[in-house]
Length: 475
Image (cartoon, rainbow, N blue to C red; front, side, top):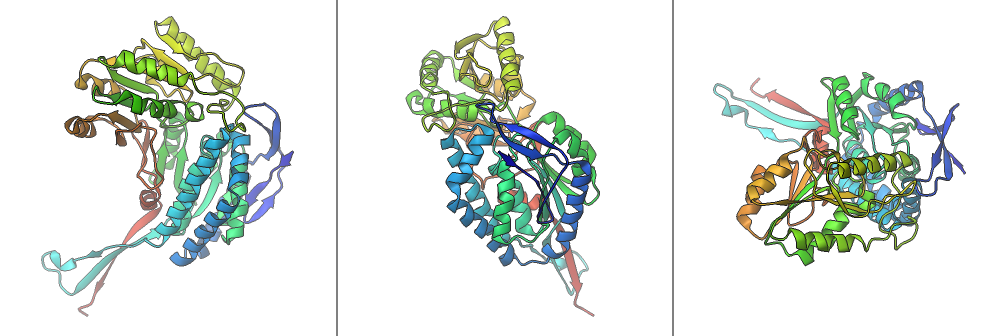
């Protein structure tokens, strides 16, 4: 059994306490994980602040080369890293390999972006009465970044925080999710091998509720980037004040399917979007709004495709859906299903569960105020809702205080463009599911889904400060 330590100032640090990490699928103890204290976090922040004084002076070339070496090491260790991910998160191995490929691409984007950090010239003489001056802007690193990450993409979502931060010259204190620390710990080894200077990356593991206050309120922290629940995100935003912050807080992603869509071409894609990683994805397809003229046909095809999915051991390459992250989540979601049924909802398929798994579940005859519809289920559940008019479809999709990604399948250009204008979401995906994401696109939500944008190029803006310089050359 692995016993982990904290990664502080480029060294493994012993701690007095640890906690047992269990496999989400089997329940067996797979590691004893170091449990940091607020004092450990303070030490890590101080170390990151000290390391920043020299790291901010590194060249774009040097930072890019470190990230390129991370890419090469991860390519070499891809299958090993995927097994770590499957072990700690219960993610099916094929999905874990896919996440590793995306993570590698994300660090590559970061390496490329390190060389693209530039400002603009400002025509000073465009202002009345100004002569003999030149002006320009440059982007400068902030300092220490606190990064708090979730369990569902423990390699890739960490990369979306580390990659941009390190590319521009910041240092980072990373607090990974309690359930998925092993992936972050192995990244400490990889960055060390790649030549990242000691202290630039600090990793503290343990309870978020015990460590977050120091991570967020310490005056040396210049930026907080958090992915997690809305309640925690709101609290963090209140604590951060005028410092920079990025929040990705989840959603209940909706999809409109118009009569012009070809059901046989899209149904498999929709099923994948709803049930990948047991629905534990911020942009997992949760609400499907189908025109009443094709509702019965689509629902029948969707249920049939759902029933083909295999639920089981995440290390089995044939497994499509495996365990929820912990048994408490299974209990929560089964209670939501029973509550919806009591209010008139119909379970078209699925809804059966064990201590650790829930079969992919399709629910019909729902109302918009049911928890399975209006809240983020973060589970393998999708609701299918009929609509009469396109106006009604947009109204139903927007009837939520969340808005990360949304999608529409249509062959009518005017409907697609109208959806772009009227749908309240950070991204509108035309002719694909809202679960679609690439790692170079801007990613973030509106309403209660978040604040700021990820996607390496766009994250860089939030990881830097814009500085303006002018010179009077008339003296």
